[in-house]
Image (cartoon, rainbow, N blue to C red; front, side, top):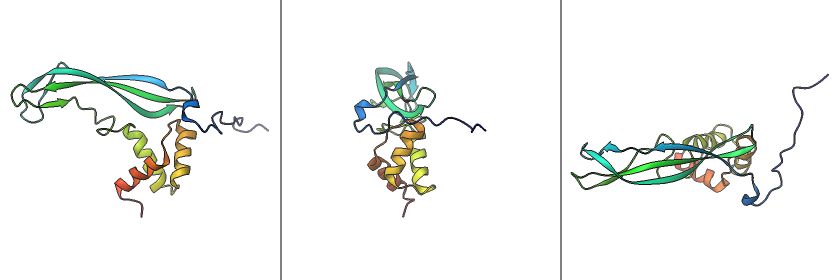
Length: 149
């Protein structure tokens, strides 16, 4: 009688160097706008500069490789209050973060709800979701939520 599927070993098991991991699949997202309302005074501000930011997301299991999102976003300058601000990308990631909100929420959930220690949670994220997150980063995220005692 045949089982539900064939066991295929993880081709990345035993890799100790991050540079030897499979190259990521690149997805592009745009938050590049010509005009945006100023968050301080609501005046319509024109685009001043354009930047690109790389975010690590949950991987593509069909292709067996990680996924990176390149977000192109605009910086605007308000001519009324003379303040600079960026187009909002908080739907994807927190300010200054290297990982998407989906990765952060999954990692914290693995530790808090499933009770995994930090190192196995890091391995679980790579094995099941193809996103490499150092265990110390997961520890910082969990401690920031204040949910693990």
